[in-house]
Length: 129
Image (cartoon, rainbow, N blue to C red; front, side, top):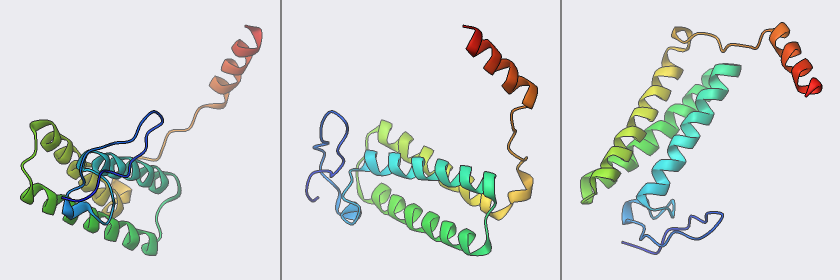
C-alpha cells in the first residue's frame, strides 16, 4: 500500500490508500475503475462515429490489455468489498465490450442521426416558448 489517491474531485480529495498494483496510476481501486469506464465510453463513441484505423485498433487493444492486466492483479491480491468486486466486474465488462467493438465493428449498427424535420420542430418550439 502506498500514498493516498491522487484523485481530486470538485469538492474534496480522495484519501483512500492506493494499492501497490496501482502505484503507477496514483488512483485508488474505485477511481481507477471509474477512469477506465469513462475512457471505454469515450473510445466506444469515437470508434462508432469515426471508425478505427488499424493503428487505432492496435492502440486501443494495447490499452485494454494493460487495464485488464492491472485489474486482474488488483483483484487477485486484495480483499475487496462486494461493492468493489461489482465495480471491477462492470469494468471488465466495459473492456470486453470495447474489445468486441474494435474486433467486429461491422456488427454494430451505424449511430442514429436526428431527422432534419425533428430538429427544425424542436427549434421552432424552443423559439416560441
